[in-house]
Image (cartoon, rainbow, N blue to C red):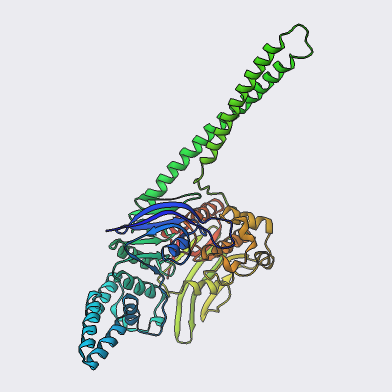
Length: 524
């Protein structure tokens, strides 16, 4: 056990007036399972990069362990998965080659070098590393045969598990795990949570509340104007935060009343002193010195009250600094004259001999919110594209009501690029309303001037979500809409859906969201 000590850390990007971190000090125990929470674009990945030494900063970061970042950059994706895993853990192939060369040379110097390399090889479990990798994969509920397939032929979920298994086998490393669940289905997330719960020594960025709840013992939170650590999981953190926010809001209301009282008192006192001062002139037989003395006392009292008011205003500014207001969003849901919007009858979709969907029956009626569930590769996105008319059923019928307006959110954000105003124009959106929704979803005004290529993945997803919310629609079709989206924004999305109750069909592996929103499920 050791500590990672961050002292007076400050950082801002070049050509930016905004400080990402200012005078941050905290201590992280390397045995912790630490969940990392914060709004999109607030600096979670930047904090990881600072720990990794990628940027210059002021302050100090002290640690006795090295940091390792997930996702790992795989250089040779065509290699067998087990070789990729071994290369992540240590340069075994290089060491084996050097030991072979030493044996071939056979001289005393070479044999001494052989001993040094062999010691390194043993310290990093070189003779048993394949067995260790297999054991980790079994813990992750992955068949060991996957390890003997080329890495680039694996599913994204399998790749995630291979990389994490390898990273946890590295010696003296503290892992920085950045959103590992985005390519995992519900079962895969549960398996990964169980695996991480058996480990320690990591910071985990995830916006999946159920996932992070089940595998961390501390929360590191990026607040509006501070960063802090609390013991517990997400449920503990959000309960404490809500209680703290409510307390600060109540304190603020009391403070505002006190400020109003002080302002009125100051105005009265100012009037009194002015009136007394005016009596010095225009009135015969008065003691002007005495009146001036009284006026001076009144002015002094007025100044004292003014100072009290200034102190109260400063105190007010200090309050509410970390209260995250979850603002109410809106949707433009149009009434539809028919009850039945979509119906699939015995739909099969195949590409050549490969059957993706077979004999699917589904009715989407007005008010339905259908959660599509199934393992990765079960055909959820294919079904969505069939409803959208991008794929034709191989057999069966797909009925979509005439005149139905669909608001679609794709899981792919690659189209979110270029100028924001051009995007708004191309999507035929109301600029004022659209930007107002983005502001409510924690977009700063400065973001509107940037090219969207520089947005975080979470910010790109919010662009797609905001477009879906503000466009006129009868039916929402959302394909993994919450990937990369921060927790507080997820709560906003849940609130607006529960308020407007749109008809929708969606794929989402966030179990909390799915349970709250769906009225029925389709299991593929």
